[in-house]
Image (cartoon, rainbow, N blue to C red):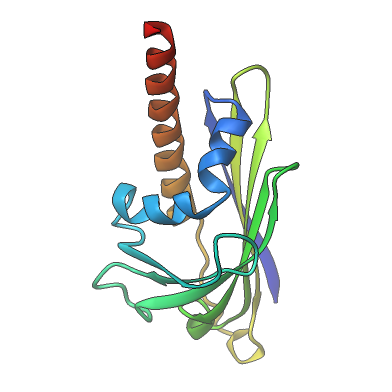
Length: 165
């Protein structure tokens, strides 16, 4: 059984500003600070920040499934502002998903507006087809909102410094 879920968060920012935060390790460093209730810890296990990195991501205490999972960043496209990662161990795979892919797209709209589209594509393992696990974009939605707020504050600070000069 295959499926997908999508969440969109509109921002008052140019796509390039949002992508600047999402594209590299900065987002990984910010998530535990901005939304510790989603992922209190994100550790770089392998790689240097580009495609191929492996992250060890923790769920908050009290979560009813395994406390960590490994995620491999499989795609970073700096032209189309798309980032994809695949869960390679633990977490969602231990819940019955055979494949769990996360795609983040930053879509430019009219001037100084963009959309953060967070998509989950999944496939349920055969042995779980009669009682499939539940996927949700709630965590990705919280992350998108927090990163957009961070990027907006960063932009406002930079604009304030420029106007002072």
